[in-house]
Length: 149
Image (cartoon, rainbow, N blue to C red; front, side, top):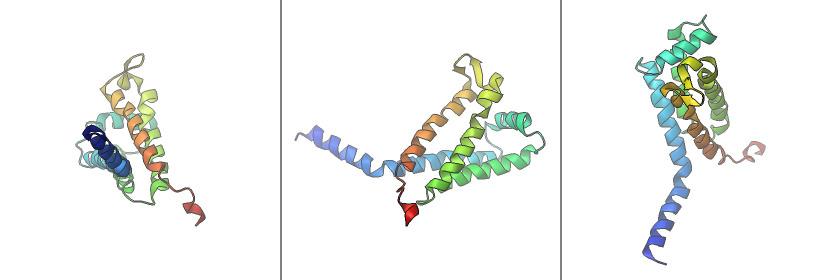
């Protein structure tokens, strides 16, 4: 076996041993960080969130909603780090993604500049496909027999 093949096997072995941990940490970083930015009133997504809120739930104050939403995102991120919380966090993630994908349909003037041409805000939302893929990596590790114990 040549040196290049040994290096390749070592790298792939490392990835196979740590891919779920990397996925968990990646989701944690994105969700916790973006939630914290919202909580600190520093998020560039605030105008989009406010427009969506005004369009869907105008009876809720923006301040109340953004604090709740920020804490919700931070909770999702944190739960991805805790083994055994996968089922719970996947439900929360689905709720969050349904909410965050809303502007693609409800606010097309903000999220699309043309047919299948997203604005920067639209791209920000569409990147959630990557989060879904990483969440699937984590969810695939759930032992479905755990619930029978």
